[in-house]
View 1 (cartoon, protein in one colour):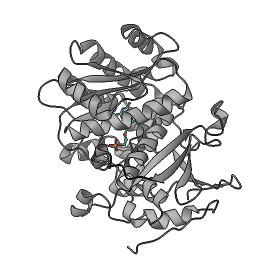
View 2 (cartoon, protein in one colour):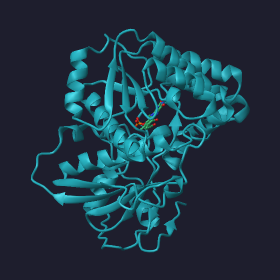
View 3 (tube, protein in one colour):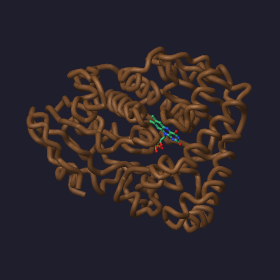
Amino acid sequence: MKRREFIIQSGTVLTAAALISTFSGLPTHAEAAQAGKPTRRPDPNAFAQPIMKAIAWGVNAPSPHNTQSWKFAILGDLTMLLYVDEQVLLPATDPPSRQIHLGAGCFIETLALAATTMGYETTVEMFPEGYESDQDFGRKPVAHLALRESTATPDPLATYITVRQTNRQVYSGPRITLSEFAELTRLAGRGHAEVVFKHESLDPFLAMFYEGLDVESRTFRTNEETRKLFRFTEQQMAEKGNGLSLGQMGYSGIMKAIVTRAVNYGDPKKWHSVRSIDASMKKMKKGIDSTKGIVFWITPTNTYLDWVQTGRDYARFALALTSQDLYAHPYNQAIQEYDEMKPLRDRLNEIMQIVNPQKIQMVIRIGRGQVPFYSYRRQTFNIKDSKTSKLTQQP
Ligand SMILES: Cc1cc2nc3c(=O)[nH]c(=O)nc-3n(C[C@H](O)[C@H](O)[C@H](O)COP(=O)(O)O)c2cc1C
């Protein structure tokens, strides 16, 4: 693929078409390329403009349901605005779009870490135009990001940006120790939220993981939201570049083929059948039961800033886990803000002694495991022209 260069002056409109031709078909992740698999992530080396290079790194960040709800306005070679993409929200499982904003934080931190390997430090100005209500989602920026040349050494966490993966499989080996956790927090560095670790008496939490997933799976509209984001063939995954798949859920080989047939490539009747849900719960329970530690992120308030900053914390912690050959599997169902989840949410808050306006922002199980399926990223993102505020639509 021919190397393309983007020299974008301040205020210039970057069309989605430009991004499409650049983001598509580029060999990126060495493993994927070597295995002859379709390209799954954008290649930062395909860009000359530092901010575009940094974005191409940033999109490796984790995001809820792999939505990648990120929208960009390129202001110059070194500056940009980040928005959430209001067309890509999770209204059923994430009614306030809290997790979507954690995903924005993950993007910011991943970009900033990557920039250190490019010889830049990143100044992040949060909510430069204010942020008052959901009316501002996608209309006002979450952050203004500015790269500045720096002689500082690259952040070691950046090494793991393309290697980090969510792992929903069964974990093996011993429980994570307090000293291992201390090392993880040291590597991740001081963040915004309080980080709480559990490695003993896990049973009540594991039961809540199970119950939360059960509620999500048996509530039609939340299970339907996941179905719509599920990709069954490699072609679907490559075309959409977002969402979840059986591979990401830990299925492989013959089991993957059997389950694909059982749910008939996401046929609604099969997907929502008691039989399919029971089988999926049985599989997920094995993973839950193999948990080697649980980590919570808790904030004293529950503001937009708390959401984005906790996302930044999580991105760093996930990379610290990768550096120690450990994995994360978020289990956020029990903290989600829809009515059917309220009894469980209340119980978890009670056990954790969380009192309004405190909020558990993120919960993960951690442990050691086999390398999971490598997830895709979108090849096109909506670009917001900062001059006219007109959105360039993704095709
Ligand atoms: C804020 C946030 C919440 C998430 N919640 C869950 C969750 O509840 N369950 C889950 O299995 N994965 C969850 N994930 C993981 C994403 O599904 C995952 O990051 C995405 O599919 C991309 O895959 P990757 O992390 O392997 O790159 C969450 C990720 C983020 C950033």
